[in-house]
Length: 437
Image 1 (cartoon, one colour):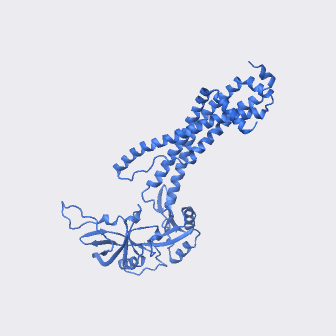
Image 2: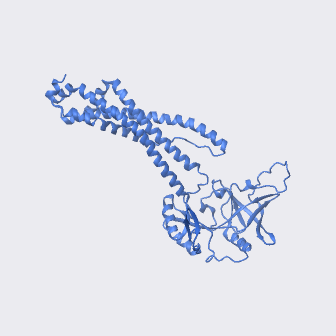
Image 3: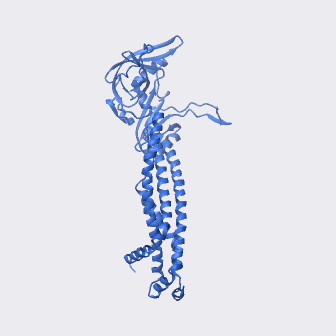
């Protein structure tokens, strides 16, 4: 008996008992649909969680700082200071060591202003988070330009997307409407550097030209004013009243950018082993992904339990079929059917029930996911509008491989369920089977 004859015989046998086959397949449909919809829900929750994280930033970036936790110990759940050695500074030599690590694309030092900074544009003022950046092109940080350029020169600055929203009029009277955010592009602004001394506040005013506005990234960069690191170092030396020696003082912060997110963990571990503190947003994403992977396994397990219950129904149906068709089996073996032929027929019927249920379950699961997407997105969008958070783009995600996997799994369950009845049918003695009433 060849494959096509086997298929034709299996289809004919199943069609003879349409009602019983349909009722048995319903259990498989429920189990398969449960697997598809629950795993799809877990995937949707995972993708929403990673996309809705505010300020997750570029996953290829690693923030490196001197390790100030050196010398700290934990006693009774509290951090206590032991001998406080000076943390290893991040020097120019350190930057070269970072750049030599495998998978590193760029190493960009940063300096934060040690005093206050105020931008004056017309009658409006902006308190600025001023950062000196050790690269001439902010594209090295993964930024893009909304307006202007990303190339920094001495005496110029590039502002983040949300910086103009911080503008205010210090002379505004009660009842006046807030002024519109100023257009900073290509404008000459007055940068006031502020330091505080025993005599009071001292300001140093510098004219600076704004050459670019970055596109929104939903990270700290949106609220940052970037200037060349040499300019900020000059301002810090004026604030501190001394020269900065990078071999001793080092850099406050360094951004190490990996070639791909896959390299981030290895680079981070290498930097920590060198005695520095390092943090990467990729670590947070990996933790979230691990959590939701476990959640998907649990959801899939719940659906698998329903499919196992359906498998018992398939086994029961096939066992009854063996009893009902005992004489038929004896006749088949009497005219030359081998044990292998009998096993193949019954396994084929069991697999056929699993396949029918699997296809139906995959279709029901996918359609249920689409309905749930519409209902859940309407509810989540209304909730996001109340809180001001960005609305989610989906609630359920069904990858193309999941329904295929569910169908194959259902067929496998059917095969395993029909194994015992098939073996029982194959071991029947033809003479005894023909006498069976």
